[in-house]
Length: 256
Image (cartoon, rainbow, N blue to C red; front, side, top):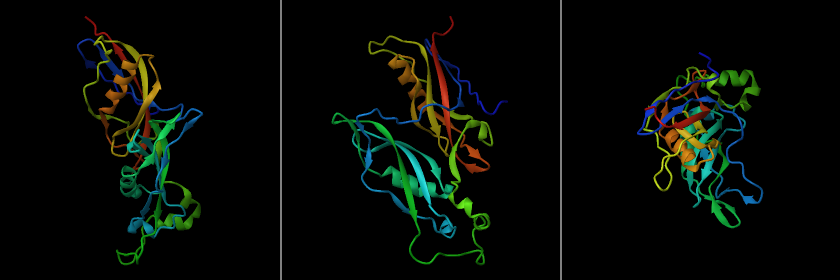
């Protein structure tokens, strides 16, 4: 199997539609590009978290976790995904900080709009002495850091492509797909491509339209359908990772 293109086939029998999805390598425009003249969202307080004590002894020069965040109309966090972290152990504390963050929402001509932005969570050394266990042995990862100081600046949690994963990306759970209909209830059909991130727990995050069908009901049904998918948690070299995917959807009449 070509691991650079992970294919997941979804055949859903609907009353009058078939939905087919395939997960490909994600490429193309970045999420959250804003047009000129639009004020981007702004976080109210720089998020800072105490570094986990078992990691604090490592010589990390710039301990951080960077997130892609979708800011809602009221300044709350609508969605997020971690795209880079110095250590995977930083994720729990950083995620808590992101979930309670508040923003000044983006606006266009004074009207709030939903927009994406990047947020960096900084980690600080906890106060007080560090507890050292295991007969005074340091964390095993401290050895390569000390031998090669350049490693200190390399994030150990990053976004991967499907072909870089230890195992092919697979769907663990899938909700029934949505049927695209107009406001009058008429079913419509078309092809569209949706992009998203699959986080370290296998959840689809930061879903957006990659290639529109030109029909709003078809685009909306594709994004809502992908939101109901859950994947097996992705790993790369044995470590958790985030992976970016593209999923084509085809809505067409069923064969008689």
